[in-house]
Image 1 (tube, helix red, strand yellow):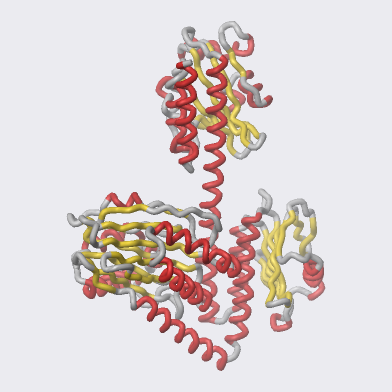
Image 2 (cartoon, rainbow, N blue to C red):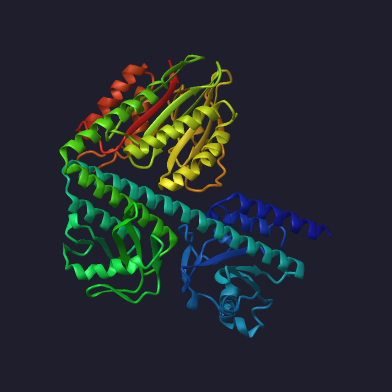
Length: 590
């Protein structure tokens, strides 16, 4: 009875570890240690297969490696690479192949373990049990436990280990999903950054060929395709096709067939992973993905990528949709730029919107109680920027403020900024924590963001000057840099828990952290523009340079601090026009 109680308790502890972590590799050793606390074997290890490749097994555990053969050195995160056919006896292959537990109680008597006897004698074990790790009906690895002559395993203990192995599989699944989400967000960030760059160039030099070829190359790269084509079926473009392989005019018949075929599909985009279809001339497509270029109900063309060796996914389609919409916007901008009158009209409207955005942010500089200042420096890369900051007094002791980096620039970003500000002002009076405000923001704005295919990273903070605290909720943004009153970077930075951006998933639950600011001389929040600012050698300004600047200048008064920051950035970049918005917000001692 006591044995069962201990097994159950440790199984619950392992379950808690798994459900509270998003990274198997951070908890794998703790899982093994917790398991070995209540069973007789003192040695156990976990081996994984990657990408369904059973040629090599990777030894990923480390907590018990001091007791396992010295031929298995501690290695990288993915584990020590071992030849599965050469390094493991046949009964382990059988366990993996048949997805079953195999218990060899005596290696020196069981014929299945004859090749292992020398190793077992040298290492001091006489029995071994193998548990396949199964995820979605596929074996992704196995756990083995080593037993001495004094060790034995009862049925209840085998069931316990089997349950632990199931939890290992669950932890790996959680890790894969988490890494997939991060990879998608990184892809989207890269895509948005490049789209902004080529759109800015189009605005400046009106070269539609460079614009199309750049976006086509991005589409091909981000979807891991061998070929990419943008087909424009519009008289103003003389039936052009832009290709990642070549760029020249084609005869109308070549790609009219493509557009006619796409007209048959009701959906705007899709992918086929078993196509075996001739897309254009002699380009054979084993698979392909496409998205229509539409202005209202008018079909302008399409963007097509083909031959992804891994097959296309919904994530690839989402990225292609983002690029397709920017292509249509670029085509519209190109047409507008042909008319000087229209161009001047747009410039005038953008200047008005820029003034509105400055008015929104200028209200947010304020002197706080308890000898604190809240101020910011903002510099737009374009006429209308995507970076936004607003502070809202709640009562005489509390001020809530938000820093956001809206995807893209221009009129759409200005509209998003206005929505965020309106919602934020209302929510500050109705919710007590930064997490409550962030969760409600996401609920209110998700549908609108989804329709417009945008998202935003942001931080919501509530400063309490009476209790000297700062409550923070982070939606995919950089964590603040905190300088303590001794002139050092504070470890409080580690308490800022980062979640995904607003507008990505409807049911995201944002968390918050409350930190003490009693000993903080400055808390600096910022957007990615300052970090990614490049000099003539293409070197980024980076977080480390920003930290060094803050350590050197945090004692300066507001105006002197901003003047030094402008000087530092201009000298680093050796220019006065930057490629991205720069926003720095400081909460500091007066």
